[in-house]
Amino acid sequence: MKKVLFATTALVASTGFAAAQGIDIGASVEMGVVGGGNNTGVNNTQFHTSTTINFSAEGETDGGLTYGFNIRLDADGRNANNPEPTWDNEYAYISGVFGTLTLGETDGAVDKRITEGVGNPGSIADDETTHIGYMDSFGDGAYDNQILRYDYDFAGFGISLSTELDDTDTVDDGYAVAVSYDTEFSGVGVGFGLGYQSLESDGTYIPGNLGNYFAVALPVGTDVEIVAVSVDLDFNNGFVAGLAYSQWDLPGADVDHIQVSAGYTFDAFSIGANYGQYDLPAGFGTVEGYGLAASYDLGGGAAVHFGYGDSSWSTVLDPDSISNTDAGQETWSLGIAMSF
Image (cartoon, rainbow, N blue to C red; front, side, top):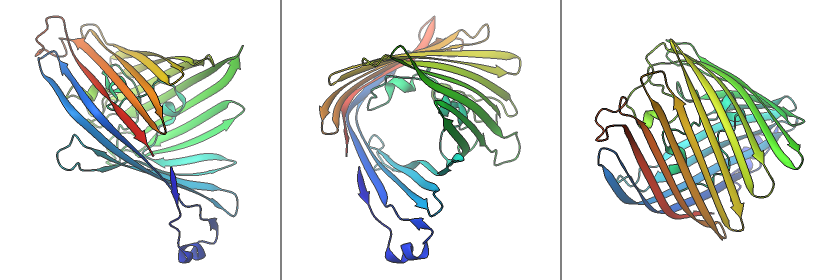
């Protein structure tokens, strides 16, 4: 990562209450092949390139407060429009003895404290985390994805509070609270997480990755309450494992989601796997998926990556499937990731 000092003499002079620290710039590039298919007979294979440039900076006031920001520029070469880069993951924060306050496109309290998956070396197309069974952001992004979160950590304990506002003022705002605790037993690192999140759908929200597979959303005014717990283990020998469970309380129905993950690193090799499943109300069957990822570190910031994701669901949810029992989709990718 490179550090470039953009602050000018005039700027420093006009902001004497703070210390100019400069801007950190990091970049990563992916190149390879991606593919996959579904149970309706559609298959595709294509080349893939992706470029990411990340900008971040941090400063400190005369009173000892730390402040900073982060923003990322993404360009996906699979887009023919050259390739229409977009800004993402923008947030700002201020931190002190009171804790840290973060605002922007950031994790909510539950996503901050719950460990959904461990041991993932990554892939160039994120196949292992985009399958239908993977749970990531819980209730975050239900509105405009601008989240205000407060964090405080002490002696292995952590607490977070967050809220996301409905800009249209037609449904209730979302909020969340979560705690975590990290410790060690007999040489094994152990992490626990517990969280609660509440929101009211504005007609665009659907949990997890379900929206990538079904063109539906929870109706306007649907109240959603989420309780989530997680435990993760680090055996300090290259092997890690994790379990996350969440219950979604919807009007007239409860939906359970469970996710297990594990990973192992040895020498330059890393491999990870995860499995996620939704337990839906009677008559809708099961929605589930699993992901695999492996990497080999070439050194110098470059690594070879392979990823695979498999998704399946009942034909009750997909009557156009050519299968009589289940519908689904699989994706894969192989390539090189380079960081600078």
